[in-house]
Amino acid sequence: MAASAGVAGRWVFPVIRLVTIGVYGFTAETFLEKLTDGGAGLLLDLRQRRGVRGTDYAWANSARLQSALSAAKIGYRHVKGLAPTTELRHLQYREDDQQGVGKRNRIELAPAYAERYTREILEPFDLDALVAELPADSVTALLCVERDPEACHRSLIAGRLQAQHGMSLSDIRPD
Image 1 (spheres, rainbow, N blue to C red):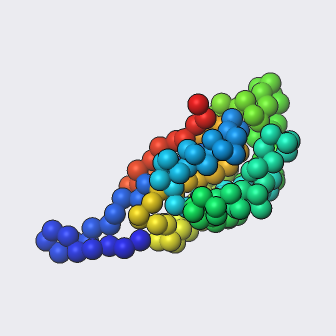
Image 2: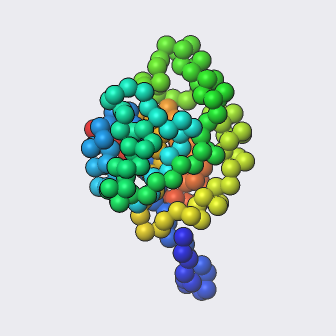
């Protein structure tokens, strides 16, 4: 990320544009279309396991996704350090079971999950180093599987990046 000397010698940093996107509800074609139309130049994969079960979402498995992104001239980076642990995912699954919802139709994160994810994963992670490597001339997309960002840890990351680094933020959802 390049800075330039601005008014009165103060450094001016470009505003990094950030979007979140899930897998559920998209086809490979609509997913890539939304990213390219939105100006994405880099996708950060925030999943621990970079696969999705079922034939409808086989396109989102790591090797296929990376190939499709490359063909669309979108960079790819796996940020495993921001992925929830297996234990945390199971905490959320237990809450989903208690609420009678499945992962594909969850609408919000369990408060205990959000608190632990923030404390155990997000707070120790060096977001400053990540931000320093983000492109200023294109949009960076945060990827996980859930359709709605409110149901996914990517919303916690995006909120922290927006609050601490003044990033422009929007969510891409399927039509």
